Image (cartoon, rainbow, N blue to C red; front, side, top):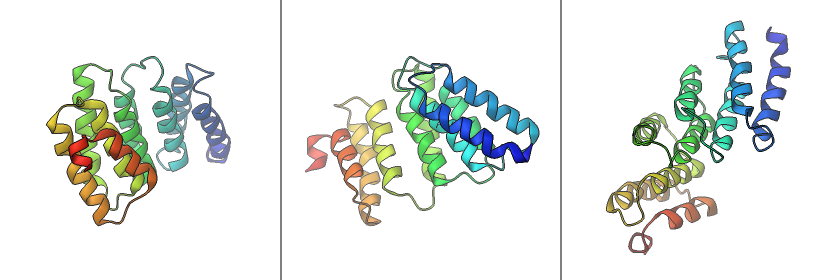
Length: 180
């Protein structure tokens, strides 16, 4: 089974890129991942986990996929040592469940806070994803959104993270007053 890992990863990578063509790509990816886990190789393979998370995150901008956040969290938690990329991809899933039920919204915000605590050295992508999550789950005129964004941006600037993508995510999410 372990010699099959490169083949599994290739298929998972293709599925993560085919979410617009294959509406059931996330389910297919999860089925392959489950087979890998059954064989004992999924939890040791970061690439496989990341491909499944990418598939769930990319698909989630299309018609709702039931429990995609819970499924992404299950993949993240199955990893022995989740990577920064895996946590960032899970944050992307959190940001894309904005149209979900209030319980899924609450879960997205809880997962976001849990990931914030787990990440030791966040990068510009992490800070940008956090901005996207808060933008997705708090209304434009909500002071709570700015209250969440302010420490994110302060920490990003303190760490010297000023990438253009982060700055544009912040400007898009924050109120005009906060941007000034």
